[in-house]
Image: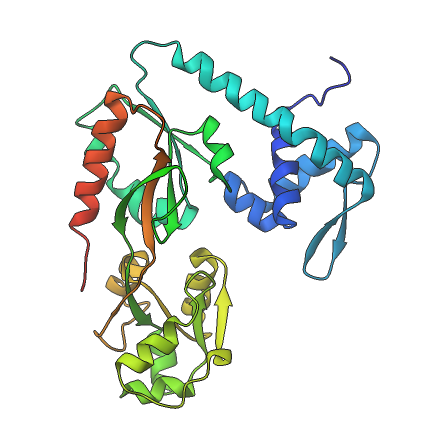
Amino acid sequence: MQLLPHSITSVRVFEAAARHLSCSRAAEELFLTQSAVSKQLQSLEDFLGVRLFTRVHKGLALTEAGKIYCEAIKPALMMLADATVKVRALQANNTTIILGVPPTLGQKWLIPRLSGFTERHPDVRIQFSPRVADESGFSSLTAELRFGRGIWPRMRAHYLLGRELYPVCSPALAKRIPINSPQDLLKHQLMEHIQLPQVWEKWFIARRVPGYHPRKAQRYEQFSVMIPALLAGLGVAIMPRFLVEEEIQQGKLILPFDQGLKSDYGYYLVYPKDRQPSPAFENFTEWLVDEASHHTHL
């Protein structure tokens, strides 16, 4: 056993960094700081005595040793996750819910409301975990909050919120380059989520505004990066209003128009169809869907 790393955390951090080829994205997924991720990777490299990554212009690249190690640890981590789930299932009345949550959704919406559930169900323990990339990762999760169209093979999906999209920007930007009509948005740098391609094009078509070209929009992989860009006045984004409701109330961001767009994409509660939900999870699902139903702006 002395040949094993002293901490499974360093292996999990390596797997996430190898999958994303990015320390920052691994940190966000694992709810760690970027510094903590770097330290875990350095610790693992010191233990193994080899370099696992090299730094490139836009992130990380796996070395040959890193590629070998990455392929070898994946099944081991899956076996560990499966064993954990099986042992937990031995508890007759399992009241623990392990939930995969995108950081922005957790911070902006779920966490501020979670006491509404925990006060009613004090015996239920909610444990947050990094999101999974595919169905195999559900061996270690009860369910996941996922952004998409609600159609995933072998998955049951309950729509929550987020289909309603609105243009959002900082008041300073709107003052510097006035926005008095939808046409004025063409003067600005536009931003959209990478999973919402052509959403600006659809918004302009709905407003009968010609002249928009899809290449004009910058694309972001995560709303957690888009929001600071908005606050910095880097452009106008189209996104779910509830993610920036706090900033709107504080006057840090504004809605230039109250005309939204209904998208096919949104946030869903997702879990495998072949899994029998526990009573605790059924109560949580009912509460979550009901809580989300109160937040719509279209």
